[in-house]
Image 1 (tube, rainbow, N blue to C red):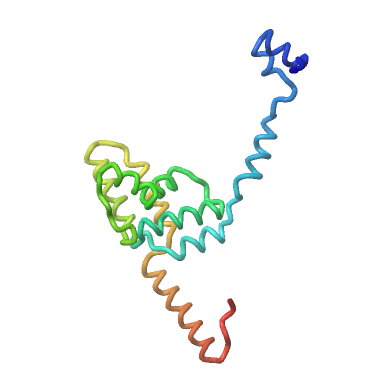
Image 2: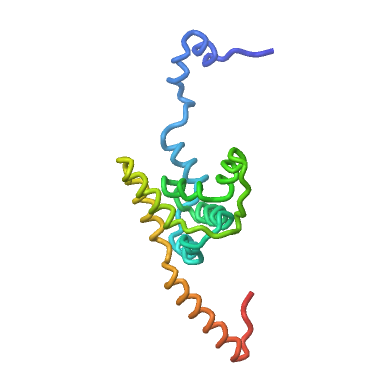
Length: 171
C-alpha cells in the first residue's frame, strides 16, 4: 500500500511544486559532491607523468595509459585532453572497426606532426585553427625529446654510480 505524503499531493496537483521543495539539492551540495568525486589536480604528479613521455614518439596504446594516468592525477578533461584521447587505441579502434583496418597500436605516432598537419588543413579550409593551437600548446607542456634524453641519461648515470658504489636500489 502506497501512502501519499503532502509532497506527493503537491506534485500531483502541480508538477512545478516539486521544484519548490526544500529537499531539493542546493548548489553547494552539488559543489561538495563534485569535490568528493573528482580528483583534485596534483601538479607534481601531472608533471611526472608528462616527463615520462614524448608526444612526438608515442603509441596509441601508450596514449590511453597516459590519458588514464593524467585523469587519475586530477588533470581536467578539457578540449585538449579530449583531442588527446582521440589519438589513443580505444578511440581509434572504433574508427578502425568502421573502416575495416587493423593497425598495430603499439607503433609510435608523432602527435605534434599530426596536430600541425591538422592545423595546416584547417587553415587551408579557412576553418578556425584555435583548437589545434591549443592542442599544440598542450603538447608543448611535455618535455622535448632532447630534454627527456638528457634527463634519462642523468638518471641512468646516477643509478649506475649508486649501484657501482654497492648501494642497492630501493623497490
